[in-house]
Image (tube, rainbow, N blue to C red; front, side, top):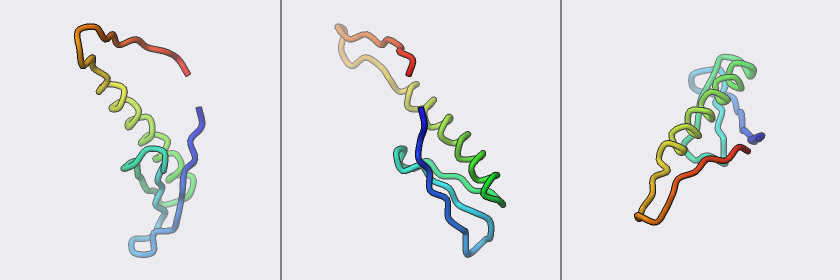
Length: 69
């Protein structure tokens, strides 16, 4: 699965800020565009892991299963 990211220069501290609009709150930064890209990839993986861990049944008749995408 591919995610779109937005990278923009950090005018205050230098370097670049990166965000993933599909995952609100998923942000990172780096000194170069390549570093910011690598860092946001790690941040996206971390956000998805946390979201996946939050999957819990809300009633006795629900099941949590896994699928690959």
